[in-house]
Each structure stands twice: as C-alpha cells, then as structure tokens.
Length: 466
Image (cartoon, rainbow, N blue to C red):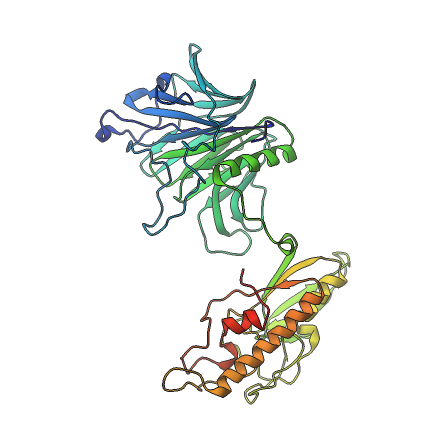
C-alpha cells in the first residue's frame, strides 16, 4: 500500500434487535458509535430506529460501509445465480492482507468523527448523512441521507463544479462521464453508448472512489439531472461499498492512487501480453462483397488527409450470415486469393487484394498506426476460407466427415495459416473468437467453408483464442 493514497472501506453493518423490524427508509440519524470490543479497526454504530451499522477500516484510508435491512451483512455480494462463484473482493475483510488501522471515535456535538489512519468519517447525528475527510480536506459528502427503499438503495452526494467522473466498466465510446448517467448493467450493446462489461466502481478527479459490493443492476447519475448532485442507485435493498480516498491532487496522481487502492481490495489484474497494449483489429472476412463504385455501406478512409479532404472510398455489401457472392462484386478474403478446393458454388471471380485482411494490416502500417493484434473472426457466417463454399453433405452414417469434407477444412486452415504468417511478419499477433463448434460437426447441412477444426487452427493455423 503506497503511503500517498488514502483508501477508505466503509462497512456500515446493520444489526437489528429484531430482523422483522428492518426499516427500508432513509436513515434518520445517529445515536452513538463505539469501537468494537472484538476488533480495534471496527466501529459499531447505532442509527435511529434501532438500525445498527459498522465501519471497518482495512488500510490507511480504506473503509467499508454496509447497510442491510435484513441484518445479514454477508462478507461477499449475493451472486445473481446460485451457480455463480465469482467474488468482487480478493479476500475477506478479516484477512491479514490488510493492515487494519485502529479506529478512534470522537463526539463533536452535532457530529461523530470516526478516524482510521488518514481517513476520517463524519456522521451527522440529526440526519445520518456521511462525509469523508483526508487529513483536513473533505473529499466527499452526502447531500441527502442514505435511502434504503425497497425498489433500490440510493446514495446522494454533493458534486463540485470542476469534478470529473470516470469508471463504470466498459462504457462503449466514452470514458468521461461528467454530467452523464451511465448504466451499471449489461445492455448487450457493443456499439457507441452501449455497456458490455459493467463495473460498479467509479472515481473522481477530486480524489475519491467508490466500489459498490454488489452484482445488482444499477445506474450512476454524475450531474445529468442536477449539476450539483451525484446519485447512484442499485436495485437491491442494501448498501455495501468500499471507499477510496487519495491524498494527492491532480487527475493523473488521483488515477494512479485510485487504481492501486482498488486493486488492494479486488486483487491485481491479469498482465496483458505485449501485443495487448497496442491497437487491435476485429472483423469478419471471407463473406461479403466489395466494390469501389457502389454497395450497401460506404467506407471512407482519410488516412493522413484532413477531415475536409475526400478519402479513399470502398463499398461493402452483405454483412450478414447467409450472404452469397453472386459474381457481381469482388470477394473479401484473408490473403487476396480465391479458393482452390470444391469451388463449384463460388460465383465470384475477383479476389482483389485491396479487399483482404492483409490489406488492412498494410493500411495500418502505411498510416503509421501500430497494430498489435488481429482477429479475422470466424463468427457471423464468416469462416477463414472459401474452400467448399456453400457445399453441404459429406457426413458418414456414424456422424464422421468424408475425406472431401475434411479436405476442404484443411484447405481453409492452410488459408488461415498463410494470413497468420503474413501478420506475424508485420509484428501482428493473431487469434480467433468462436460462436460455433470446435470440430467438424455432424450436421450435413453445415456449409463446408464454415466448418471448424480447433486442433488444426491452433497447431497449423497458429492462432490463439482470446
């Protein structure tokens, strides 16, 4: 743990004298707070209406805050399915991984100040509202009492005018969320504005971060509705969050501290291979038709030209599973070469290299854009070759494939190998993703050019799966 970062882990563990009396309303005040007799880094809190809470300091600036009307206070978030075993934290709060700074409690009249290391949590006695200080600097404060409504738990925080917000996982097309509302849910949308891999963690340029310990869907409003307010919601009747507070100012310093502290709780990320730090290119090849004059979709490449200049234009047609080349357009390929095995159904005669995956690699190089990896994906009705183009049959009575069927598969793997060798010669690693069988299937209606052979793809084609 770096001394430059202050992480705060708030665990307001609610304990009810009678679980049936759990109150799902905004907190109404604080009666008292005392250091736990069982652990010096834990502070037990008595809220109004008999609700109890707990603050657990984990590091010099990390605390956890968990408010649960059921009074269960689980170590880990409830998974969305019983079969799921993933956990958000890398270890429980009791782990010796944490230094667990001792806590102190001071009654300041209208407030109660709870300090652990460099972080101080301030609770307003009348409202239960919380604020956090790093040293003498207030870095975050609730502008409304924590609301534990049955429809969802809402935290409302004050937002500073110059404060910027980041995080939330894969928020496609954007990383700065100031004055925006982001979804903490999988929208299954990979285009601009969609959310593919949400993460209930955000941090701000003012020096604090919050990791909600939940798998429940949510939304974070960073000033979209009210420019002076941050509102975060998760659709569960519980509040459980880790807080991270930075000691240094400046966006780059804060970013470094926030990530270091976040990883202290969640564990270090996987170290990417070298090529993973460069641009990647993913697309479907061996399927569509192309032209330089007309087509369904226009693609214009500016390269080094200015935005006002006309770029190089190409037109793509097809772009869907089941599309068949009819001979009027050039065929897209991996290597600028047509098929050589079982070609009777291939109507295209033009396999111009300018419409190939190789040309894409060349385009990156010509425009001085370092490319690290390339997925000439087999999904969406695009295999890695056109041998056996829309030919079917060739399945024996025992479900195995005929020699001709397997020969088409081998020819397509060889086509993949040629592309891999070319990509590697340019310093580009290759891989595949898949949405189909990993070996030639027994369905006689599967077109031969879409058949798979995982073993050959890896050993002969030289591909890895991301």
